[in-house]
Every structure is written in structure tokens, then in C-alpha cells.
Length: 416
Picture 1 (tube, one colour):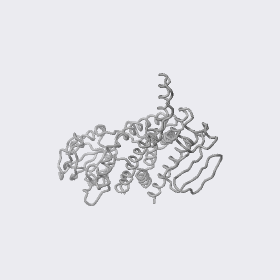
Picture 2: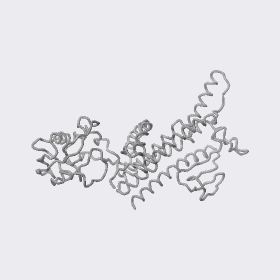
Picture 3: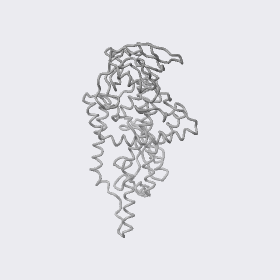
Picture 4: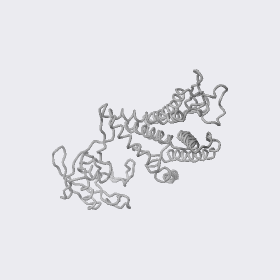
């Protein structure tokens, strides 16, 4: 039940975000005097609506977004009634049209920033000093987190009867114990522990010295077998190695909370990291298509592949089911930031395409005026329709592929 609740809550959060996106367009357009005739949440048949002033507001039957209708977005639009010629959008200065078209993305960014700030003063943001690479982790003290079993490298799943039990658990080690030696070899860091274990064989007995709550202790256990790549080549071929069945408990906290004022700086820093990550994710989109197809046709799903609204909602459900609300809200932040950036790409039919054309017209008019030639006027959107249809076709195919992969072979963050 909690999983279903999480799915519904996340889908509702997305719907609200997209509706606020359209509200951003509407509010700024009305503020500049442009005519907005319709604002609806959803698509398809109208369930309920009312009219206030010149705008009809309402709710439609398919809750997959929303829209607002601004009269005369392009010179080719034929939705202009007599007397409204001066209020059509394309006649307004380019800076006003830019604000109106960018208002949707700005709304997504505002939602993300507000959520990040709230998290910074409540649940906390990821600690910038937390070890994020193997090299950093291996410098940490060998304070352990027990695993229930030993699974192959990168196997994100629950334990099965076929998996070897954790040798560390069988040796009565506990979470938070710091291992100080294995078979007499001093262990000063987690890297030392990994190196020492790789020098042993599956089935060997390991004599382990540890410190628990400041008190030293010793125990022994028989090491299990698993598959791991070489320590000096994480991308190398995995081979059988000895395993203790433990992970690392870093000495630094995973999250840091801030005061109301300090949270502004932390929000800015985190947003900068998010911007870099989003730009990198957009650059990797084309190369992820084969991985999505592999996942759809029965291969392993790469956790770095894109997800659709369906996949994001499923992850939101998992987060609520596991009481991981920070994950839920971080998904909300990431999705809003991604949508905001994506909508600013200079491609029709997204908002960034309209902005790019408006500034192209402005730049072209400026150049023609300087060289003494007549202003060529507005861009003919009808001539751009083949390109627009191509973008829609490619984007639609990619969306369907992602949705199919999220249904057939979804990404999971937690064992269910």
C-alpha cells in the first residue's frame, strides 16, 4: 500500500510541477497584456471548467500535463479574433516574449531551489566531504557495515538461498566494528582490508582483530567466494576472490544540515553540482539508447540509463515504501531541474526553440539594418515544420522506449 501511495504522490507532484510550468507562461503573458484564452490541467475531454474574464480554466480527463493558450504565438497562427491584433504574442518585444517562454523553466528551477533549501535546513544535503570515489573510500578507517550475504559485484537485489552467507555475520562481528588486523596483518584503512582479503583465498580461515565501543576483540571466520574485478582496474574482468561480506561505514556523515542563512549558500553549491550533472546527462542521452534497448530485450538494466515519468514514479513509490523521503524529494528536485533545462534547448517545439527564433529574428533585423537592407521580417514557422516533426518523432520514440524499459525492466533502488 505504501508503494502505491508513493507512486501516486510522485505522479501528482509531477502533474503539479507541469501545471505550474504552464501557469508561469500564463501569469507572465497576462502581466504583459497578451491574451490568454485557455488554461487547463490535463489533456483530452474536459471534466470541469469555468471562465473568468477572457480565460477559460479547467480540468481534463487525462492527467499527463497541462497547457495554456496564448493568442498569436507565431505570425502564422490563425487564432486571432478581430480587435485582438495588438495583443498577439509575436508582436511584443523580444525580451517580453523571452520572459514568457522561459517562465515555465524558471518555475521548475524555482521548485527545485525551494525544495533544496527546505531539505538543507531539515533533512540535510549530501556532504561534500563524503567519500565518493574508490580512492577516497580506501583512505577511510575500516569501520564495517555487515551485509546479509555475499553477492556478485554490482548485483542490486535481495539475498537468495544460492548466495553465500556473510562470513562477518557468522563471526559475530557487528555494524560499526573497526577491523584492526587480519591474520596478523595490520589494517589501518579500508583499502588495507581490501588488499589483505585479496591476498587470501575463498575457504581460508581469517583471524580478525577488531575494536568495538573502544574495546578490542578477536574472532575468526571462513571466507566466502564472490566475483570482483581487480582492485587496480575497476573496469576489468571479474574473477573469483575471497569475501568477508562487509561494506564501509565512512567516518564522515552522508548529509549536512544548515541554518536558514547558511542554507542559501549550500543550495547554490548543490544547484551548481546539479547543473553539471544535468548537462552531462543530456550529453549522454544518445549513447544510452542501445542500453535502453538491451534492457527492453532482456538484458541487465543499467542504473545510469534515463527514466521516464513512469520510472520516476516507481522510484518514488520505492522511496516511500522504504521511508526514504530524502530520496523521494531528491528525485523531485532532479526531475524538475532536468525538465527546466530540457525545455530551454533551442529546438522546436519546446520553449527554447521559440526563444531561439525570437532572438534570431532580432539579431537578423539588427544586421540587416546595419548593412542598409530591408528587415526580412518574421521567421515562417511553417517552413520549420519538417524539422519540428522530426524532433517530435525522435523525442516520442525515445519517450516510448524509456517508458517500455521502465515497465518491462525498471530501475530499482531498494530490495523489495
